[in-house]
Amino acid sequence: MTIKTAFYAAIGLLFAAFLPTVQADTPVTVGDYTVHFSAFTTDTLQPNMAKAYNITRSKNRGMFTLSIMKKGNDVSPMGKAVKAKIEAKASNLTGQMRAFDVREIDEGNAVYYISVFHVTQGETLDFDIKITPLDGGKPFHVKFRQAFYTN
Image 1 (cartoon, rainbow, N blue to C red):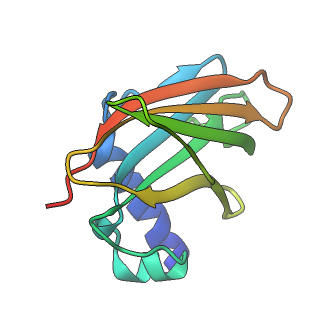
Image 2: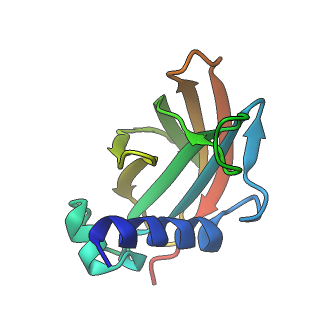
C-alpha cells in the first residue's frame, strides 16, 4: 500500500469516525457542493501518515480535515474534488477566538485541506470555516463544534 493510498483510507476513516455534529453518512451539502470534515487529536494518526505530511502526533495537538466535492452529470457519484480558498477560525466556550493556517494537499483527483493546532484537555471549539470554491461558486460557511480530550 502506498502512502497516498494509506492517506486516502485514513482520511476516509477519520471522516467516518470523528464527525462531531453530523453523522458520517450525512456530510454537509450546500447547493452543488458537499463538504466532508472532521476534527480530532493528531495522536490518532498512523505514524507513517503523520511523517509523510509533516504532522506531529500528540494528544495536545488538534487537527481538522475537510474536502469539498461538487456534483455533476459528468463525474462519479461522489462528485468531483474542488479546490477552494479556506478561511478557518474557532472560538472556545469562553469566547476566545483563534484563526487557523490551512494547508492544501492536492493528490490529483482528491484535494484535502488540513490545519494543526494546540488543544487542551476538554477544550471545546466552535469552528467556522468559510469556503470559497475556486470554480466560481459562491462562498459559504460550514460550522461545527468539537470537544478535544487529551487524557
